[in-house]
Length: 489
Length: 44
Image (cartoon, rainbow over the protein chains, first blue to last red):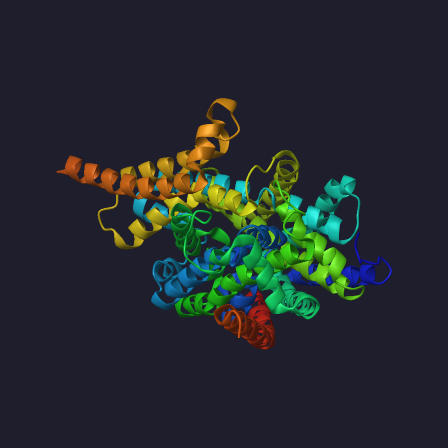
């Protein structure tokens, strides 16, 4: 059941699509070389950087994942947002790692690693970034399709069609306009998102009442759900992983770092992080609020057994009135499209710039480089479509995103810090860190699906695996560097 | 007032969100114009 009316709300969504389509076509003429395509001529100023970064990191998948946290854990679900916003603010104020990174004028992080650790480490870094990044993004399309099918009242049998339509549309303007197009469409989407989210929040508070929603959350989750500490449900290892993943994301997540690398200078880069930090908090505050509102709306027994993620979209479909739901759906589409377009270009830049570097050796013409970048984006799109349909989600979506992200976050953050501040860091240490950082989370993903290991792996849990990969990756870097130093003597 | 921390927390978050979005919307438009001009100038 949904309030979405194809004659009233449909044209609103269509209008949004048309505007993005026309802007995409218009910006095509501003992309003539690789610098325009990948880093928008390094001409991004503070406000456009904020809009783009905030829009990129808030997609339908994030919204559904974080609403699921709100539904399951109450206001405790905001903890990863506090960790992320806090990390971004600290890094923005101090310039920790991002200042030297921007000053080196590289396109990707592995490019920086080559200067310190050599070509092989650059290539290996590119590989783990792609594996972690693509797996992380793998379920975005499915979640978007699921959200749209519920809110627009489209039969779930058309999920694949919805996913394909979103992908083709996003792929279209990303392929032709590159980063310039991504930035400008992000800006439009950023404004629309604010309009949509503030409207939903206002309607929910008006309909349910602020205190009633919190009362319901407390009644179901207990008064503990209103505190920000850890407990038996939100455990200490989970809290530690939240903080580690937050810091590592801010330092190395390619879609965040690409905004730093596109900035005019390091001062602008730092300002972008400082002002965007509270948006990273809002990325959790809004969905978690929607999640606990869905708990109030449907009651605690309505969506259990892994279906909690569907509560928020169903509430939106049934609660938001005709006319406004069109704006909300357009806003959610905006959130999703800005995320997908930025992620597509971020991973394609790493594939072209780092993984294919031994083939093109930076000698290809701009025209050829542009062609291959566009081709890579199309291939990534195809992968996302197939993976999103195939992969069964066994855990919280947010946990899946953390574990897949850790494949590269653990080692890349260690390498980046070592690259910037550890004089004796060696290629051997870097190699050990990369291998350990990737093997542990990948093992978790595989072992949870095998019958002989499933029980043990689930007993240990994803958080300990995540924390372990950060810890052992750092240790690997230190030990490898010490071995190199001893050998050299 | 019930839940004073969370009530204040949400009010501050949402006021900040709306205020900065308006600021970014106004100034971000100028940034886009500048970005396009800089690309145009390099072409020339």
